[in-house]
Amino acid sequence: MITTPITPDLVRGALELERTAAGLLPHRLPAWARSQSRDGQLLMSEAQPAGVRLALHTRATVVELDTVPTKRVYAGAPPRPDGIYDALVDGQLRAQGSVAGGHTLAIDMMSGRSELTPGRPGTLRVDGLDDGLKDVEIWLPHDETTELVALRTDAPVEPVPDPGRRVWLHHGSSISHGSNAASPSTTWPALAAAAGGVDLVNLGFGGGMLLDPFTARTMRDVPADVVSVKIGINIVNNDAMRMRAFGPAVHGFLDTIREGHPTTPLLVVAPILCPIHEETPGPSAPDMSALAEGRLSFTAAGDPAEVAAGRLTLTTIRDALARVVAQRAETDPHLHYLDGRELFGQADHDRLPLPDALHPDAATHRLIGQRFADLAFAPTGPFDSHPR
Image (cartoon, rainbow, N blue to C red; front, side, top):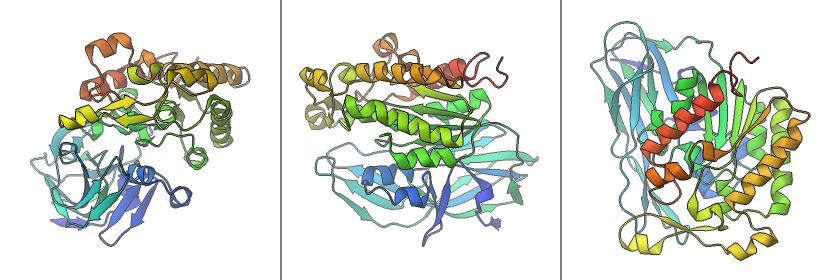
């Protein structure tokens, strides 16, 4: 077996690789941006490698990857399964696996406290590949922090040649991050990227789409051919701002992106349907009756009577986003709007209800991914590669 150093040219979808005692930790926000937030949820989410993959050009029939995963344990909630690695060969899923061991992060959702217990590395082994020259992608678990320790193969590897595909930069909430998706290559953004023939940079952060200026500046500086921002659910379920602040914050976020991408197709996506917050403001809170049954679910804790005073719901956010985009589109022909209910609406919820009242399941990720591709990447869509 040949040991190959893991270098940035073998990794796609990460904005930074941090050197740690064990190896390399992929980040989806650069260090300067991370330094501007003390929020543990965001720092955990951005270090979970959604959309991050190793891309290898090789004749290897065996690939071994040593990693140190961080497993999350939530007090009072059922145990979480180990994170899934997807192995794709020339774009087709060929194998899946998990890495046991690693660190354990115990989290108390009620108090917000957490405790990390260190662990040891484990190994992912993918074998039985054909011995022809091929592109092998190892997609890291989208919801499990993963330090890269060592890469071994039975034939030399080199970076995958640049395929010349466009880069899609996307920012959103835990739904974009991939919460409850079956695996990292089957989150809705990954599926949409595959259908659209683009390379994905996924800045979906669980609980972290809050119009943070440092995220906008990060997006401004990342090279991209098409850009999207999915805005709303985290603003509501964190009860993060009122209507007075929301509109100007959206304008400011888009202004910053436009500083680096002045004519890039930019799509603003409003929230998908989420019944608990359609007419009821946040914050979201754990459903204690569900926890008593060993299930994780959420409820809306806000008061609908306060909407008139500026408390935000998904309904009022969609209206505000539509107004902002319509106003800006008068002078920005490359700006577009998509109502998230076109991706997942009431009829879809009747058939595929959100299991925990906030996040889609694996089947719904597939539905959203295909619909987004059909709407955004299709001819005459905002991300059409040959606009007319």
